[in-house]
Length: 165
Image (cartoon, rainbow, N blue to C red; front, top):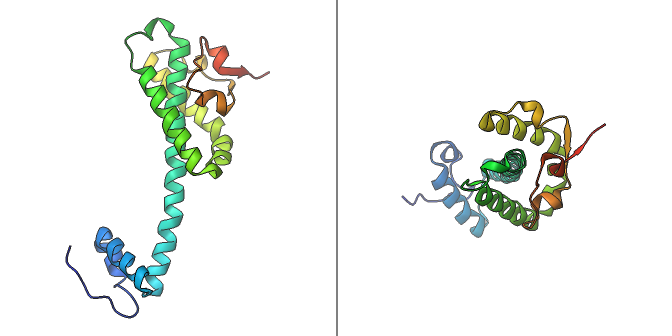
């Protein structure tokens, strides 16, 4: 990385747009020295906000993958052996649990998003299994703690979902 001198007001804000990595290094140095421009402070605030959004999107994505594999597990017991479903289920549960331990405030948006996550997971499960989407929909999700339990696997779809009536 080429070292560019910092001015009293910080690095050039255009560096943010032209070489993000170099900007992070320069701004990190500027933070340590207490020398940043207003533009850099605005970019830092934006990046911190985006980091939170990125974590939330990752949580949604991981839960969608987890639910999709649990749906396939429950709907097609004859295909469990030899599949990678179990490994995927364990990995997603582990990573979601780590994220929730590191950022407990992600739990609430995850719970709020579960109806959409269930629809997305059902769509993917239907596509991958060839079963109709109705096999996986018109239901509501189990408790998050149950979905994340390393010891719990649904034997049938009714174990995975609580029927809505």
